[in-house]
Image 1 (cartoon, rainbow over the protein chains, first blue to last red):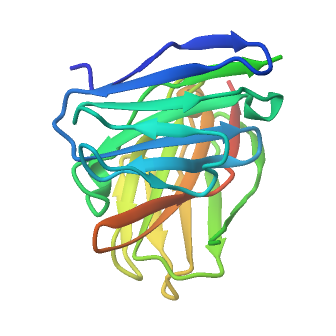
Image 2: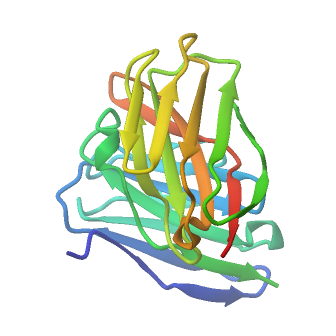
Amino acid sequence: NAGVTQTPKFRVLKTGQSMTLLCAQDMNHEYMYWYRQDPGMGLRLIHYSVGEGTTAKGEVPDGYNVSRLKKQNFLLGLESAAPSQTSVYFCASSYSPGQVTGYTFGSGTRLTVV
Amino acid sequence: GQQLNQSPQSMFIQEGEDVSMNCTSSSIFNTWLWYKQDPGEGPVLLIALYKAGELTSNGRLTAQFGITRKDSFLNISASIPSDVGIYFCAGLNYGGSQGNLIFGKGTKLSVKP
């Protein structure tokens, strides 16, 4: 049971570089989410998607872009990385926002921007 | 935006002791959730609460949805070393096609054998 898979697990970027984080789920979930976790801050929603081809902004969307070209994949892009984007990024998916027991999180991507 | 105040920030306890942590909000939530995060992993759902006043148990864990819908607590009885981790509360309001988990800042639990 793969669930939610995030790649890569670790990455170091230089300021100004770009990269894409990939989230893949095999549960046929409609909803997918990208969160960032910073020390002492909990998890904050960056962007989310309610279905293939749709995306929406969350609480902290600036500096990130997302795409949901296929139902099973949700990509998070950083066009020009900044040190403030050093964080641990988590992807999650669910059948619907109300089905809280079905929220499944990936194991995270630790990103360092130097 | 909505914020959750989770306390305490950290706890250092002896194995076998009971643990209590809570979450408060200035806003009402339809659902309260408690997650545990192990090092290097994503959060895993422990308990979900759907009704004001609801008291739910999951093994040694007990959680309650406050009557005012603005708070929740989690108790862990007879702690063991594998209880170590970060515990997060989360509130959820949903309507239509949108819904978003709002997370507390976490309680880091350390257990001494």
